[in-house]
Length: 222
Image (tube, rainbow, N blue to C red; front, side, top):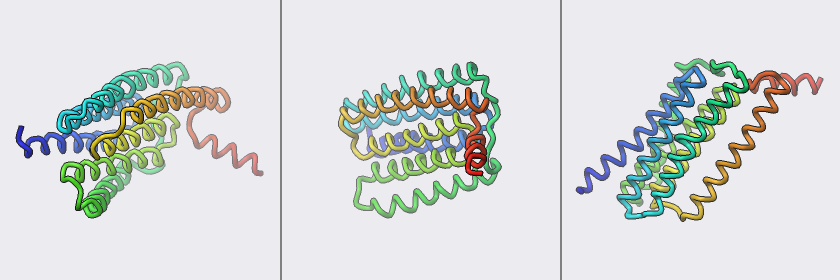
């Protein structure tokens, strides 16, 4: 396969991850956001699998399988069930409107491209552009976290941010298998802790809107 086509497919998949990150920013309902996260993880799976093929690194197929199993299937399904069980309000409250958030996202993507392409001039061309896309995904995930008040949507933003880290690690010629497995178990443990945390918030405040926590802290200080 020609080098040009190899680059094009890798950039298409990495760019697709950035596009789905924007789609996540646009969502205003929890179920739609979870579906977008599942798609985000599926695109990550394809990107990592392609990097495994290009780099002749079979251990990256394990990373792709972990992303597919945990992030594209298990976690979204579990969060869907958690939302139904907790009776969480399905609409997502945002700190700012969707329009300003999207413009901020475009600014972050532009910043990622400018910064990363300048500081990695000596790196492999495929790795340079994948790292730029990965930084954009990471910043967009952080933007999801800071512009949403619902705890579940902030969790999704955190996990999409972690998808950007995985893309960066695989684009930079992969990472050791033991690191991938430890990351997968860390994600699983974090998800269990987050589930317990959500149930406790719902039980105590009858909501998972983090604004309730801020109000409660303010009352206690008085």
